[in-house]
Length: 208
Image (cartoon, rainbow, N blue to C red; front, side, top):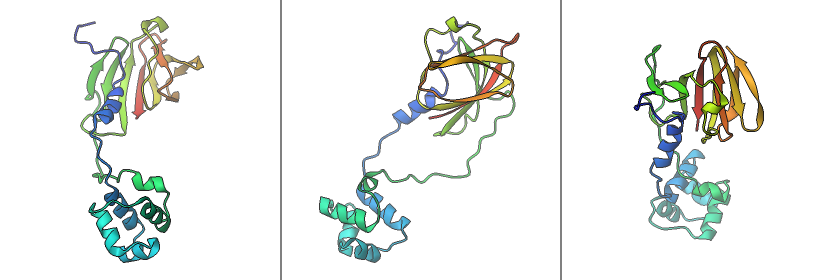
């Protein structure tokens, strides 16, 4: 194994790290209120009638010129037919839709470790909700791992060829062959080894 071989972790863990490092935007109550009002198709005048708050008051709240009292918050929640916590949820971010990323065969980004030979797919897209990658399973024994692998998110695994043994913290080991799959909580300790003559290959998809 060369000195350049990367640490034995799932590349999917970088998805969680990207999210952890993302800037947390401060709460903009006015923006959130306007978003809710617009989602109901209400004008300021109509929202005023529903909530019992003056139109000018609503306008000032939405423009962050004043902060509503708790009593006003109750009127807003009741008039807009939402629960109070919904007023404090961060506003939805506008995102570009229709993205795509094509990875041609054997054109993924290599990510070797001591137990896997990963090929990362769809690497041109950032802020993905899923991380797909193919892996050649080098590990042959349970003892090849120093400990259970755990990370945030959920994972789907599909065996492309060969045979693997899938170990998980709370279940008995199970052998999976070509075409078999498993979906699991990645916070649960897990690991896998090849048991076929040649190293097995799998498709992994992680959602954080």
